[in-house]
Amino acid sequence: MAKIFITGGAGFIGSTASERLLKEGHDIVTIDNFNDYYDPKLKAENVRIVKEAAEKYGRSYELIRGDVRDREVMAKIFATHQFDVVIAWAANAGVRPSIDDPYFYMDVNIMGLTNLLECMRQRDVKKLVFISSSSVYGNNKKVPFSEKDAVDHPISPYAASKKSGELLCFTYHSLFNIDIHCLRYFTVYGPRQRPDLAINKFTRLMLEGKPIPMFGDGTTSRDYTYVDDIVDGTLRSMYYLLKNDDVYDIFNLGGSHPISLKALIEVISKELNIVPEIEELPMQPGDVNITYSDFSHAQEVLDYNPKVRIEEGIHHFVEWYKKVNNYD
Ligand SMILES: NC(=O)c1ccc[n+]([C@@H]2O[C@H](COP(=O)([O-])OP(=O)(O)OC[C@H]3O[C@@H](n4cnc5c(N)ncnc54)[C@H](O)[C@@H]3O)[C@@H](O)[C@H]2O)c1
Image (tube, rainbow, N blue to C red; front, top):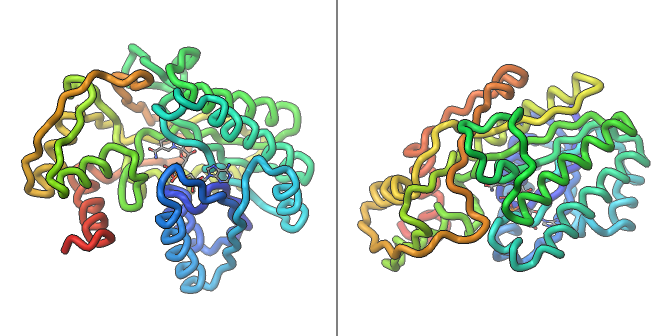
């Protein structure tokens, strides 16, 4: 049993992982500021479900409504609890909005992480899973993307902030022996997915009979990764850190089956049995052409093996979406 501190535990991935962590017998303290990037009611509902899981499995779950940048609040949390490991999900996610408000992205994603690492240093907490992103690869020409590839050309402030986070993590590992994994997630989807992400947005528009905005000619592709596979990889990373010392490493967590935007729209359309009208729009700045993970490093070290194919994952997502939006 471990005592785990989670940042961003009310969000899509943090809440899904929390349920699994409680099920596996761990106790959780989490901080989330319930920001309004998307409807905070969705986050409250995520937390309600996680609390139910804590009761069901007889584990302790404490939610603190606060900001990772708040030095006083964070210092108090670390003074009150002795954590075995930390998982850092809290961030401003989203590529396009980071171009409009880079100050905010840098503030949360870099200053927030600095505050977390300082608390860990001061309270001698030695294990961190930091959630990074495939966006650090920018428009990498070589596919699939490997952790060995240079990632010096991020094309959005969001991507630059995640790459900076990885650098900051290395600095704290090197100076203070904090063991760290940086996990580069490749587009995550599944029940509770953020409403701003394509699969959620397209499903909503199709069900409402509205046209689907398609940025570019539909040939851009993404390596979509089902949330249960991502959670599995993240927990494997946490268990590895708990067992091993003197670690700093970076892992791709993807599905390794990129599909084009056009094909994605077709999969959703087939699942919903709706033929949508498609509105072709210019490519958006900050959007990359392709993401494609080589996850052999995670496979080798963590025994990470994603299982859910896109058709099955979309089926689960649509089932969830219809249920929570009363479509059936
Ligand atoms: N969803 C994806 O496809 C994807 C891909 C790559 C990386 N990631 C990363 O995974 C993490 C989780 O993403 P998600 O899709 O679950 O997003 P999410 O927005 O649902 O979850 C993030 C949570 O962090 C909280 N948060 C944000 N700023 C905070 C702050 N200053 N203090 C405290 N809490 C704060 C939010 O309220 C939210 O609940 C993020 O770091 C994101 O960058 C996600």
